[in-house]
Structures are given as structure tokens and as C-alpha cells.
Amino acid sequence: MKTHVRKIQIIVFLILLMVILSGCDYQGLGGEYPESFRISGDVETPLTVNTMMGYPIMRVTRDENNYTAIALKQVIDEAVPRSKSYDLLLIGEDGLSSKISGADLSGCHLSYSSRYDWELINTLHPISSQIKNLSTIIVISTDLADDKQAIGIDDQQGYRQTSAGNLFLEGFTEKRIFEGQSELKGRTVTVYTTHKQILPEQLLNYQTEFAVFGRDGSIKFDKKSDKNYFEISETTISFTASDLTTIDDVAGVLADPPRVSITDVASDTIHQLDKGNNVMVIELDGLSWTMLKTAGEQGKAPYLSSLTAQQALSVYPPISPVGLAAMITGTLPSSNGIKDREVMDFNGMDIFERALTLGKTVAYIEGDIKMLNTSIEPVLSVNEGDQDSQVFKNSQKAITEKNQLIFTHFHSIDDDATTYGPYSQEAIEQIFQVDRMVLELTREFKGTVIITADHGLHPTSSGGSHGRICYEDMQVPYIVIKTEPVS
Image (cartoon, rainbow, N blue to C red; front, side, top):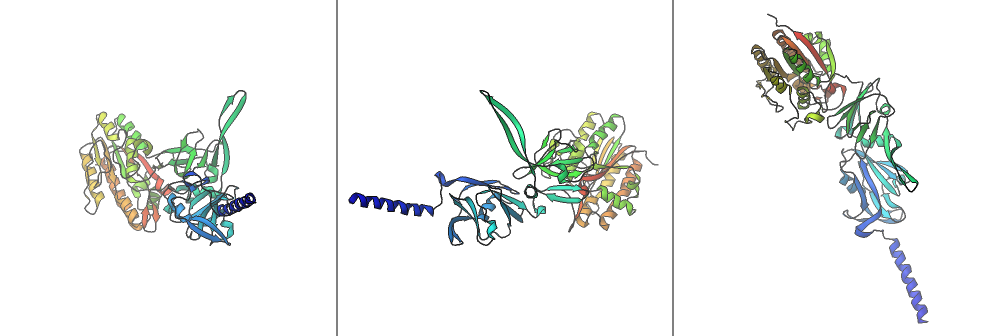
């Protein structure tokens, strides 16, 4: 009898234990669950989540069911979305997904159970947002201007931006790429990797060619091919060219770009010096191709508009020190190392050092600050309200001193275009003033004159700006003329 009672007690205990455990979440050693999910897309820090440890635990009730959960917002914040405005694409193991706004994640929770693994418990959203067996959360920037990793695209349709998260949402082709084979005792194994690919034709419209810019300052020109593609990685977009070289982190793409580049300044300068010709390089900071065209149409660039000009491509990012370094070294930022305003020491020789090795006399006329640590010290021009007037006077002096290489850097066009806008009356009037100074310098100088700009500008609500990959920022005039002094 006692044995029978003992058996009943054991059975009751086991039943109670099963009831208790059924209301508990499974956790393994160290508080980790056997399944995890991944947060990626437009975030600073992609994240794998396999535990509730480290987050405040709460009890959540939905449809009379109780859940042990953590707040979704706290987990997303740990991944650090790149934009304050974003959506979340919630993806289950079965491929079912739903999108919700990240603007208000109150009532959104994550729970874990042995039945559904990770599960969304959203008490204030429709039930279709409650993805079970969660595998991935893609963060999608909705304010791309706020996302510093968004890529710029410019073509006949105009300028726009996208991102890894947005491209993931818009769709891609999943391809298996052959990686290799191995064999053991007659049994062969073939290895593939999976890639989320987007063809160039799906990303932009181009006639013959396009240019892809890397955040490291590299550029890759390519044409239609069955071998090139863009690829979505966890947080960025990469590009594989038709020659199978790659850009790991794409900053932007331009359709049908010019092949002339501001890096040509160095080779053109040294070529002319080698031939025995004196050279003057005139850099018109901030003068884009479209700004010169607009000024010319208004009669505000009579001299510059009369010269034969080519469109030239700037470098990324299109800002003054980066453009200047590209001109004087003849190399891209990925090679010369100047990729922002913080670094002043560049890799390689500049045109001043190369000219000196040829036995030439050189002069470098700057504004009121030194932008780079060049091989010679620049002649700084004190800003007394009209900085370029002093740049002009110092350039005239350099001509009088019969320097064989003169590099002169005008700044006022960029200043006014930034303050008032690139097509404002003030900016166009300043182009007119600089046009007159350039005319006078070319009248006084004998030799080859190269006239170009480091970058252009695009309009903003507060004036003008530059630094993105668009035609207005990236396309500048490139003019080469032979001059004789006018008495």
C-alpha cells in the first residue's frame, strides 16, 4: 500500500514539475538559448542575440497568454541604428516577414519559448507583426540624409540615395557562388557561398558606362557585363567589377561619368614642364560644371566660357583638401591617404617636389590657411574681406618673379556658393569677379595654363553644400590653354 502511495506522490510531483516548467523559458548554460537571431542592415553594430541576459526582464500578457520578455527597443538601440528615423523588417525562419515603424516601439517585446524559439510579442500592433521563429531583423533607414553610410546615385532620373537596409527590402537575387571542391575516397564535395546580388541596371540608368566610388576614395569604371554586380552585406553595399576586382564599401554611383579627372592635373603639369613649358595651375574652389554653365548663360563668365572646357571628375569625398591632394599628387584618395579634413600629410610626391627635381622654380599661392603639408610652404593670402584679391596679387607677383610652376588657389566662389547657394546671385557675381582675375593672370603669364576645380556644390535649404556623390558635386570644368603675355 505504501509503495502504491509513493508511486502516486511521484507521479503528482512530476505532473506539477511539468506544469511549472511549461511556464518557463528554456535557457542553456550561461543563460544562452539554443537559437539566435541577427540584427543587421542600417546599423553601426550588427548584433547576434541569443539570450535575455543583460536586458530588463518583464512579464507581458497578450490574448490571455503570459510571456517572459525583453523590450525590442532596447535590443535595437544596442545595434545603434544609423538614422533616427527607421523601419524594422522582421523575418521568420519560414520567410514570412512584416515591417513596422521604429518611431514607436512601445508594446513591442521579444520572448523565447521551446515551441516558437524567438517570437515578437507586440501588444499594440496587429497580430501579423508577431513573427514566430524569428531569424533576422533588418533595420531600414527612412531618413537617408541622416544615414552617413547611405550611398548616393545620380543618373538621368536625378539624385537619390539608398542603403543596405533599403535594398534588402526592395529585393535582390540570391545566387550561389562556386568556391571549390574537395574529394575523399571517391566522394566529392562542392562548396558554394550565398550572395544577395543586384545588377547595375537595377540600380541606375546608364548609356555606356558607370563609375563606382568606394568610401576609401577608390573609383572603378565599368560597363554592362554578366560578371559585375552589387552585393548587400550586413551593413554596407559592395561591388564586384567585370574584371572581378572589388570595392568593399560603396559610397555612390554615377551614370556615364567623364573620364577626364582632376588627378590629371599632376601628369599634365609634369608633361608640360618636361617639354620646357612653364605651367600655371588655377584652382577655382567650388566651381562645378553646371555653375560655370549657368554663369556663362547669364554673361557672368565671359572669359572662362570662351575657352574650350572638358567635364572632369572629382574624387570622393568631394571636399577641398581631398580634391587638392588628388590634383597635386595625381592619385586617388585611396592611394594618397587624404580622405577628410583631419589629415594633412599625404603619401607620394607632389607636383612641387617633382618640379624641383626637374630644376624648375615653383610658387604655391593659397588662401589664408594651409590645407596640406606640401613639399614647399604656400604663400598665404591674408583675408581682409576680399581674400581672392590678395590671392590674385600674390599670383601676379609669382609671375613677375618668373616662377616656372605656379599653383594658385582661389576660394571665394566656394565661400559664396556655400553661404548663398551655388546658383544664387551672390555666387554668380563672384564667378564674374574671379573670371576677370583669371583673364588678367593669363594675359600676364607665358606658358600652359590649367584651370579646374576641386569640387562643385549642390543647393540646400540654407545655401549650398558638397561632399556627396552627385553630378553637381563631382563634375567640374577642366581647361588647358597656351598663353602669351599681353603687353
